[in-house]
Image 1 (cartoon, rainbow, N blue to C red):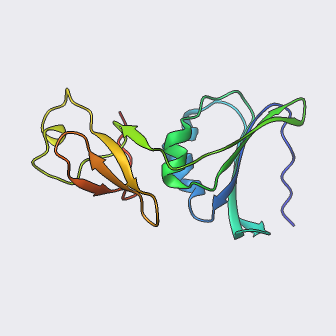
Image 2: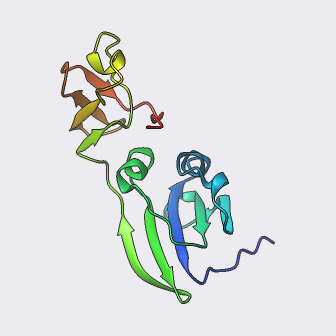
Length: 148
């Protein structure tokens, strides 16, 4: 039987759809953090059947918009003295900047390093669709994020 202890102080990212935990682990570059971190994958869940969980035993700044792009069902729990002191739900962001590439290869954001791609959400059903603010191309978020 797998047993993972609770954390005294830090962050628990819960309700991650099974399979997205490793994407989040890589996005947050948790391999470079010098504190105890646990990534649990494919554990039973009442609501999701299977889910992933990440526990970070340290204070850590999270970009909730990026988490929302990968999985809008995520819950972020802030832990202090072994108790949840704050709980945040993420959503699909309405505006994103510098997070992913425009699908139009002729868009200025794909050829000029000084301009970050910027998008407005136009459809959040299924795969989120965004309108590029520079060329007005509709771009579906494909699951890959820029590391800027």
